Image (cartoon, rainbow, N blue to C red; front, side, top):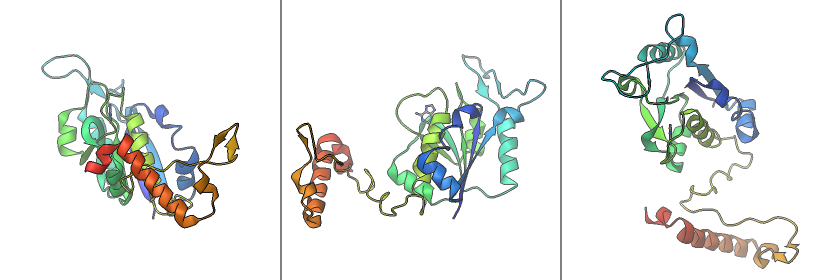
Length: 227
Ligand code: ADE
């Protein structure tokens, strides 16, 4: 399976780094995912490649125009079908692990990055199928949100993580945060690793990890247990 993500952006430079490292890069190199970043400016109107305009009714800030977005989306849709056209916005549905899981099972996605003041509402009304926020704070644009969404999705595609079980034991996947992990040295200047992890008894280790995960979730993220 190859998931394809097309990202529509006015600041494509912001998206140069995130897909060139680590797990996401490996997924792309393995042919399990592909990411294309499209510069919306290339679809701008007239000599100045205009992509935004003053809001009807007045007020501060510029609003992204429909035509460049629609033209680019139509061009992409003429080449393949898309499962979702996602718009990044602070008033969208909050990204969480179940939503990332759901999106990782899709084939082709478009992510339209939000813009300063906003985009013409008709883009949201007629073109966008899903609106996602990555948290209750306002970013200066949707690019970083698009990178976060793409990263959370791509790592879940089967075959991306070397150890197939490793995404399944992630924090949040089981509704719990992770148990703490340790590596060598077992004793660093008197800072010790819990004895049980050195015991070699796998069943005891598994029980300890589960208890730690539960206790940590209760202490740090009780909201995960109440839902
Ligand atoms: N654009 C601006 N803020 C955002 C947020 N929190 N999530 C997604 N897109 C955004």
